[in-house]
Image (tube, rainbow, N blue to C red):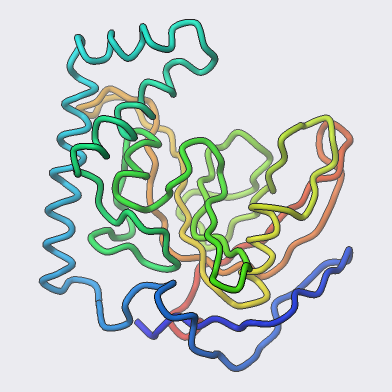
Length: 258
């Protein structure tokens, strides 16, 4: 796969529909992106994949241990989203402190040891393998050495008005906001996605898909890694609550786009 490129420069703001423009690609900031020499399915890739399988097995065994889960529940039983906090604590405190996490640094592009179609049962697993480091937010992003932020990955959990089809090459993703009763603003994850469009940088897409629950975990959903997508357009429109929201059109990246 061709090396990822980054175009640095001032970000121009616009309230109108924005479209990605063709342009030459320049070398990214050193140390911010995946090593160009690391290709998929090398010995290093397989070694990382083995480590990922071990980490996920360890994490799932923790959540299968009733004694451990009950202890974590008791610590958060009076709080909001207690079930989520149990998974976060199991991944963040127990797994991380024991050195089981893989791909711990945020990065743009493919993640070593993972491939399209890989599925996961909980959001914590996405963090453990390095696909998506945010436990709750749908947009994960990183800050470059020049202060600019770029999105690394998004999770389409189906909670918002994301217009898509499973296994489709296109996704319309609804931006993020802390309050559904207020207009969304072009900050944090929204700004990061806009910057990805400007700099022609790819975003990892993970989709939450329904499952019949017949698998070994008995879950009625899974998180599936769908590959790299390019942000091609964004715009503002009225959401279901009458407030302005951002929407981003993402298309599956072709190798020539990288």
